[in-house]
Amino acid sequence: MNTRGLGWCLHLFAWGAALLLLGSVLALLGYLLIKGIPSLDRDLIFGQVSFLDAVLLQKRVFDGLFPAIAGTLCVVVVSVGLAIPVGVCAGIYMSEFATVSQQRVFGLMFDILAGIPSIVIGLFGFSGAVFIHRYVSNDFRPCLAVSVVSLAFLVLPYITRTTQASLQGLAAQTRQAALALGATRVQNIFYVLLPRAFSGILSGIILAIGRCAEDTAVIMLTGVVATAGIPGSLLGSYEALPFYIYYISSQYTDAAELMSGYGAAIILLGVCAILFLMAFIIKRQLAGHTGPGRFYG
Image 1 (cartoon, rainbow, N blue to C red):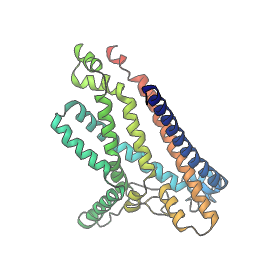
Image 2 (tube, helix red, strand yellow):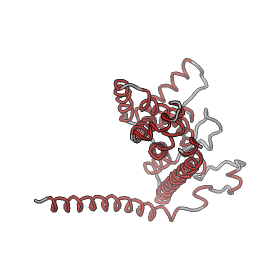
Image 3 (spheres, rainbow, N blue to C red):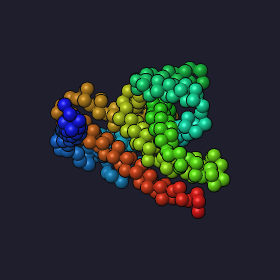
Image 4 (spheres, one colour):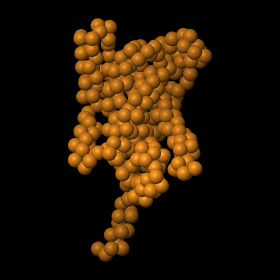
């Protein structure tokens, strides 16, 4: 086969793979929408409680998904908020300060952490809660704080590795320009390198948001409860949409209850979409206020 024929086959294969992926995503979304849209209404989210009473926390929602939505948002925002500074700082160290041997050792450790099954991370968090309960405070139980720390460990390698790769992928001219003008190494990192690498770092943050929002194994072992209501503090139990979907799909009693699980899946996708949109908005705002030109101005 000549080079032209081989290129045509590769081009055709690439298009076929892209269409297969797109078709799979559309089929999945279409199936969820067909099954879940009929169950989407105000009662599914708020039950018999009015919108204002639920949002203002004046009445507790027992027969709706509002507590699970609030719990999901809490666990995602706090987990990612805890993992971002640690992961970004670790990625900066790996890229800019670590020696080659240190990069190999720490890189292997982060790769191993990324490959650990989520159920093992959840078991580690549960064991930590048991240890604290036994030796520190008898009042301590699996709670939102344990879930947050466990999920932060789960997504930490993604943020670290994407930060490292984004910084190391910058051109040598970009790295040396500010240093040649007299900037310190720290100024070069914060005013030049990080703004340039922000798009790549954001991809790791988006991946972390999705992983925190969908993970069920970790939260099952570290504090989620079916009827806990909206969490009052980090030391309280909480509800979450992934656990509700798992619980309903495995223990539903009739077709209507199963349909509510499909509705919850659509809501979970909507929550993730909102969080992703917020991440892109933040990216645009930071790109406008911390662009490389600000350093030279």
